[in-house]
Image: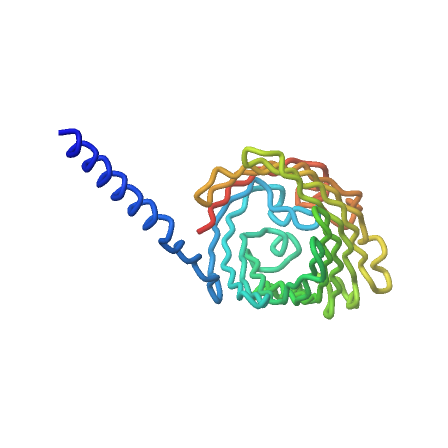
Length: 254
């Protein structure tokens, strides 16, 4: 009886050792390879569409959507659209904006990256005396949480006559506050080139808070303001499109 018990214990130990060895020897599952490219989409609404501090939607709401292609070698392309009102306010007929862009992102060193590209803003059928269609080259440098970016127009800028070679310089940062909350301060200066366009240059600033709920859903609240000349940037009701205001947003990415 004692011999049988010892034999049973021996077999149990042997079996346990064999199972442990088999588990130890089993190869780890290979990591999923990085895809050659990704294609993503986004849709959203804002209570006031602001661009470079100025309202594009007459201080009212706007619907927006976009699509982005990004290759693992750093090349990217994208398109984005929004409803607008400023073209009609300027005497045109267009009520939406279409942005087309492409570029290349790379890394110089740890925590130091760059982004070079071209962006064209299209307003189909805007029929203004000077077309609002605008094309810019841009370059950005990011170190850690901070990004500096310069955009240079290679066409007239948003309907200003003889405004080619205008420039927009900006600095922004992004701070992760935890629990899906991020804080983003921003400061920029738009210089409008060309004789007689000096009054159109201005500085803008903003502070945004975004809450990411996961599964592509995020909400945001952004406080914005500028020192833009009200005599240049205003709504039909006489309100400054660069006045201090709060814009709330809801965005879904997939």
